[in-house]
Image 1: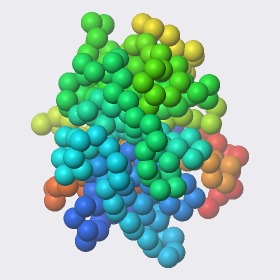
Image 2: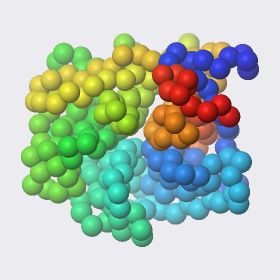
Image 3: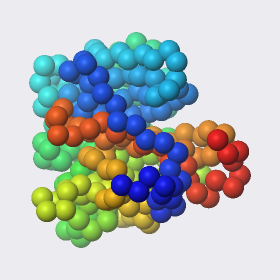
Length: 287
């Protein structure tokens, strides 16, 4: 409701779209990667969704179920894909209801490794792997959406290597979201810090989201990760069930993409929002 507003905390608004498709499988976006002019997204029904960014030509959209995964492709519980991280030719995907991590070859999206890590086995069915990042040193962090620790933080598992391999050592630590919020995604920044996307839903106040940034700083067993708020999304800003996060470099800027999960509901939308970090703005050419 304030179209002239371009600044959101430490972010500069570059564009926003509400995306629709006549394919009923489109929606439910819970994780994504933006590369070049293409978005590769996962739905929480286990579908792989690829589409061109708005305004890019020719427009393309493909949707298909992941060819392999735990349980039946017809069951949302079995194929509830909520987390993804990508490195080179591989993608790692977290299955929430199954508390499993599968590794896929990005060429044909066939799986070449899979594990149900013991450190994740006790996570409740709707509080499993919600976010996952690979750090520069080859370690992985997998975040539970809601499994609480005694100190009030939510559980994170630090894998010393590939979480899709059964013998990879792992330890537990915590993540402290802003009060009243839960993590929905995370992504590394070019400087090694981590972005955390956090969502809050209130019957009386609706949906809001906070983007925070933190330094992993050699996490170890028992430590608690946390971030400093850099943006708050609430009315009058356009916001929905923000679940997916991707970071890219574009024209000298660090570009942050955020997408929403419409829960396949006619009352919600699939939003795709584009921002630049304000600290890069003066170094980048103006559009």
